[in-house]
Every structure is written in structure tokens, then in C-alpha cells.
Image 1 (spheres, rainbow, N blue to C red):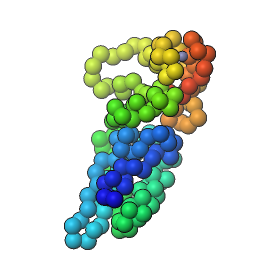
Image 2 (image 1 turned 120 degrees about the vertical axis):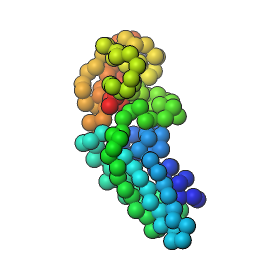
Image 3 (image 1 turned 60 degrees about the vertical axis):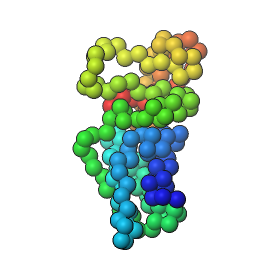
Image 4 (image 1 turned 90 degrees about the horizontal axis):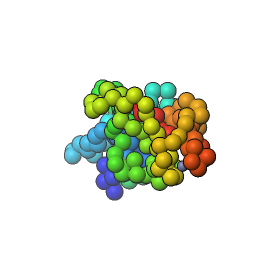
Length: 158
Ligand SMILES: [Zn+2]
């Protein structure tokens, strides 16, 4: 397996339905032709999410399993990660898992929405309410659909 494919398949420890490629966390994978040394560049998601150490370890393990034991994981912080970096495929996977995908991040251009409507991942209605700013992890908020009465996680826009 190529180093790039091995790294791209690493899943996020908190949002297990998404790979780090879906999330936009994976920035670059390079392989030195002479030495075979792999350099992976990632940008962390939400600060305060303790997932990045796990992701670094998982990247090294995935590369070792794919025959690339000599690997370095670099972290770059600029530009800062935003939920806008989540791919279309990633958004579809989130919705399929019952997690409302984030809306556009503030300051990403476009019209500023005064009321952020979060759509229910089950029935699609915007008639929802926030129950708690924090859901099962710091990255997610807990919302409830007024139509189905079911709570759901919403990945906070950042
Ligand atoms: Zn609903």
C-alpha cells in the first residue's frame, strides 16, 4: 500500500466515521525516494480535542503496517483548521452517522447567518433546538429535533 493511501485511511479517534483525509486534517504525505522516509503533515482540529496524539500514533502504526516504518509526523498550525475543510464525502458520512454536519464557519465569506439553523440528520427539518453546548465530546454540541424529538450530535462549526 502506498504511504499516502495508508495515512489517508486513518480514522479520527472521536469521529470514527471520518478519516483524517475526510476531515481535512491530512495536509501532505511525502516519501523521500532514496531513503523511503515518510513525512506526514497534519493540522490539528479543535484545540482541546485530545485526539491529535492518538492520530499521530495511528499514522505511524498505519505506515509501519504498510511497510513504511521510517515516518515523521509534522504538525502545522497555520492556516488554522476549520470545519470548512471537511470534504463533501466527509459531510455525507457524518449525516449518515446521525451527526449534523457543521455549517459554514464564521468569517468564511458569504452572507452572515444571524440564526444558525442546524438540520436534523434524521428528517432534515430545521426545527431543532440546542440542548447543550457540549455533546459526547468537546467538538460536538447536543441538539434535539422538535419534529422527531430525538437528540443528535452536531459537529460545531469552527
Ligand atoms: Zn428530525
